[in-house]
Length: 301
Length: 171
Image (cartoon, rainbow over all chains, first blue to last red; front, side, top):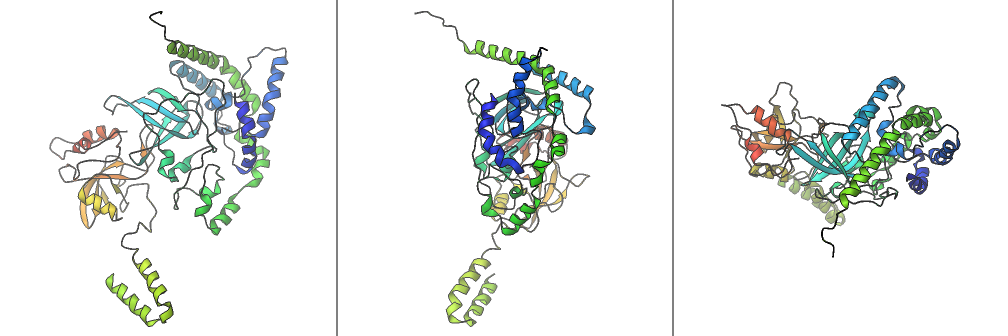
């Protein structure tokens, strides 16, 4: 599914050479894109029968991959966590979403009048792994910017709906805090915009317009693709300092990349473990959805 | 202000006649600023402590005028033992040369899971009995406030739950 997107975003990835390494990137590196296809064929050709894990799983279920930090690794804990995550996924549908998608989260809230609260917003960040995986939603309600942090596997969450499934050009959209409010304003009664089945997740290449300085962060140093008017507000001294802060050698630092990511073999092992369960859950959900949408005609002619 | 302007004009008059018009216009432009500009020399503070600037979000006359003038209230005391205001805490603010009490109804600071974090530090002005000075809050307020303010209202003390009654929306 995502292979088409990969080819589309290949040119984007090339521009992206100076970007720092992130675990939760929605965009694969070039090597990964090239490696994904032949290795799958290898698996099918081999005599040992193993479940074929689709290559897009690392983007759909990024929280199943543990934190690559060596001091924090503990294979037994990770395994147990994965079991717990699957248990939770059997109870509730946690759909595929990315940074830039618009979500509606319904959670039980003992303080609210109806004991539930629903928040609609754009996902500006996804972080952490395992049961601690969380995301930040942002919206502007009554001209007031509001952000809420949710844990994906929080048992008090009742429903997660993806209202618009899409990606943005950047890995986190914290710059929306400094952008004009219309770029993070979303209607609370928005209808679900469904994609065709099997279609690649579209990349929204919208460029947001920033407010004048002072900003919350030095956006000029972060090589953002989704910002239109950064040049308008920065002076020569900012340009110079941001040039100094660049780390163009990082893309050649293989060890850094190795330490910041889970190796492919390990990823395959992890997803082979959970793949069958996730796949059956997906199929079940699809069947249920079809059941719900089909309306039996009451009167014939 | 008027004196400064007059002095500037006099100086401009003393200068060469050719440059007079351009000089005086630039002086006018610069001297008109300080009265109504949004310029502050301190950065925005994420924590509510003494001298933190706040934003009045109710429709009280005092609050509206202070915000329109670009002179937002400053916190001069936080009524808790830590000295750092959290959501639902009572604060004393200096607003337009007066001292008023207020309740914090939205913070920029990192909040707990599932509780909203706002883009500005919001305040609702109240009097000593806990009844708000305005009649409406024009931004959403977090639902946790319902519990917090109910807990803070004691039988014979101030009744803070009146603030909840004027809220237009919860989030």
